[in-house]
Structure formats: C-alpha cells, structure tokens
View 1 (tube, each protein chain N blue to C red):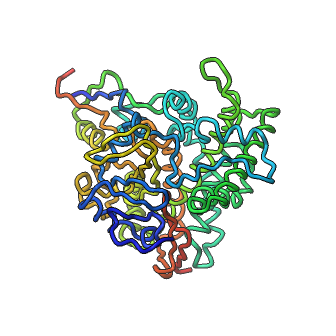
View 2 (view 1 turned 180 degrees about the horizontal axis):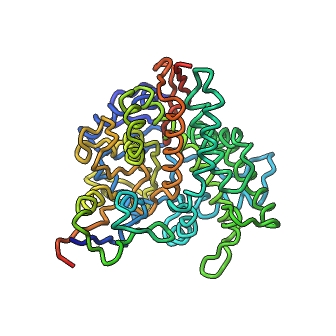
View 3 (view 1 turned 45 degrees about the vertical axis):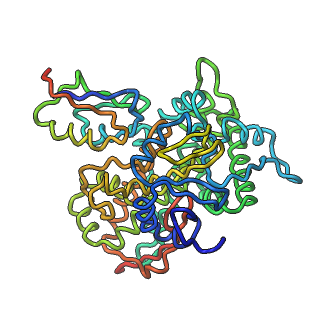
Length: 412
Length: 67
C-alpha cells in the first residue's frame, strides 16, 4: 500500500481500504470532475465511471481487448521453478488467454462463447434451482437456532462453489478449498503475485485431473462431459481450451456470485421495509434481484488497450489498462433516477452489472437464480435480522466487491 | 405497435424475456427474438416499453405501425 490518496481522479487506488468499504463517494466525485480517472498505482490504469463511457468502451473491442482482464499484470509465466506442473496446465494457461472466452477476442471469442452459452440459458440453469434451494435451506437450518451467523462466510460463500461444482460434475465437498483457491487468485492474489500464481496452478491442476478422469468416464449431464464431447466446426474442442474454460467457470462462478448474495443480505439486514416488502410481495423478487445487482454490482473487469487511441479526449496507448467500472456506471444519475436508493420495483433499470457487449457475463442467469433462491430461502426462515455491528463488516474490493465477514443476529 | 430485436446488438441478457415473455422468446444460446411477427397486443404495450427501457444493449425497437 502506497501513500494515502489525495485526488481520486488522478491517483485512485482500488485496493485502498476506504475504497473497498465505501467506493460510492469516490465514484461520484470522479464522475462529476473527471469521468475517466487515471492512476499510476498498480502498474497504472484508466477508470471510466459514467454509464455512457462504459457502454462505449465495452463495445469497442477493436481498441479495448480482453486478452488480459486483470488490472495488475505481473506478466509472469505459469512455470514455477522447483515446482512440478503438469504439461497440460502450462499449455492451457497460455492458450487463448488462459480462461476463454473471457480472456479472448474474436474470432476465438465467437466460437468459445457459443460453446459456453447453451448450458447457461435461463431454462438450462433452472434445472439446478431445486438443488440450490435445498442447499440454501440446509445452510440456514444449520444456524437458525443460534440466533446468529456470518452472512458472508457461513451463507453467501457456501452457495456458489457447491452449485458450480455440481454443474461441472466435480465433488462439491471441496467447496472450502475451491473458495480458498479462487480468493487466492482473484481477490488476495491481485496484489500478491506468488499467491495468484500458486492459486492458478492449484485450480488448473485440479481441473486437469478431473478432465483426465472424465475423459474415460463421460456422463450425461455435467459441464465437463459437455465440453469434452462438444464440437466446433465438426472438430472436438482442443483440450487446453476445455481446461481454460473450466478454470474460468470455477473462478468466475464463485467469487462474483457470493459477493452479490452477500451484498444483498447486507442490504436487507439494514432495510426492514425492503425485507417486509419482499415477504409481502414475493413476485417482486425478480426486479429486486436486478435492483440489488445494480446497486451493489460486484465486478470490475479490465481491458487492454490494443492500439493507440483517444477516448473522449483521453489519450491511451497500446498496453494501457482500462478498469471497466460497471458498478459506478450503475450509479450514474444520468441514467438512473435516485441512483443511491434501492428501489425494489425500479421500472427503468438497464444496469450493466454483467457487462455490456460481446463479453456479457455468460453465467448471468445462473447468478440471478442463485441470488433469488438465496434471498428467498433466507427470508422464509429469518424474516427479521440485522447486522450485529455495522463496523465489523469487512469488504473485499479491487475487481470484485462484496462482504467477507458480516456477523448477523436475529431473535431466536 | 411492433417490437423488433436487433440481432447484431442483442447479447442475451435475458431482460426482455424475463420482463415480457409474451412478446419475446430466446433461442438455445439465449439470444432474443420477438414472438410471431412482433405485433404487440394492446394489453402488452406497457410491457414492450419496459422491455426497451431495460435492455442494456439498446437492442429493442418499437414501431408504431400496425400489423
């Protein structure tokens, strides 16, 4: 951590503790004063904050590439001296950006995305709803009588790793380990190259082992088998691509969704009227989920400037990074009336929490389903609850924002 | 009134289908198209406007022509 930030428009620090906890005033300041902020910290980057700018930049894939979507670029190869890494892991880590389609541009992105979309349509993910519901109910029942639990660690964090493991067809009893690896890669690893490297190797290695097993024992209804048997233009999908996509599914399917579930619970803990309304009007859940996604969007992916360009008077050079602050766009008063208020039945809500353009989150329907079920099953059993101590809540920030410790209490 | 989805712009956010399933359907990849020829029955006019307002890709257009 460097010196304290004096000016958020020219020297922002997305890893500053105050930014992780409450970035909203900083975004307002940047949006009004200098909508595309800059910084030299963490290798340097640009950060648009207005809805229109995010919309334009995300759709300009010629200048803004997805070959690297993390803002801190350590540029290290995955090989680690003195460590044995399976050759498949090294190959996959270098293949199509390492985690296609999120790390790819067209033309690879086009077929890689088409391959990934069918299992993630709203209809396809609905198949996983009963099991998700059972899981959420079981989690709440486990701590209900205690009158207290950690809404992040004991609940939100427990859901997505199990759901994605079930979908992939890998054992879900390793959920705690998956969580640790994914945090090591995407959360804590953003500022810690060694941890990021070792976490990536762990995920790649584990998924590679499961892929090798599954090749000899294909199943009907899991994502691993689907990817291993799918064809693109009549050819099987190259195995390094399958491994990279599995890496993506684990990383993207876990940290982001639990952050959204956690933020939703955090909001409801402090807004008894919203809780009461959701209980009285259960049909509001779909628009409530969209509104909570808007107000507490977790994900800020990055783009890599592919060729020198001037965006809105702002010169950018090849190799520069742009932090896609979709969360700030979703609080832009030019697009959203009373942006800092959560309005469960907000009628006009074209939020871009899942991004916009060709990289729209492929797992968005899954994330929505998990949020909806997690909120419903919680409220069904714990209609009245609050933060034990608002100051005790800790936030992860950087490129994925959500509560990590959130002690809650309720009448038992 | 008719709705139209620009297939070059639609990225499969699923918002129109969730908000107005009577007007839109999605294919096996999740991309949206209007149901039938896109004609909006009078009782769904409000839904059509809501779908336009919520599409993050600005992919939905309404025309006032009658079918």
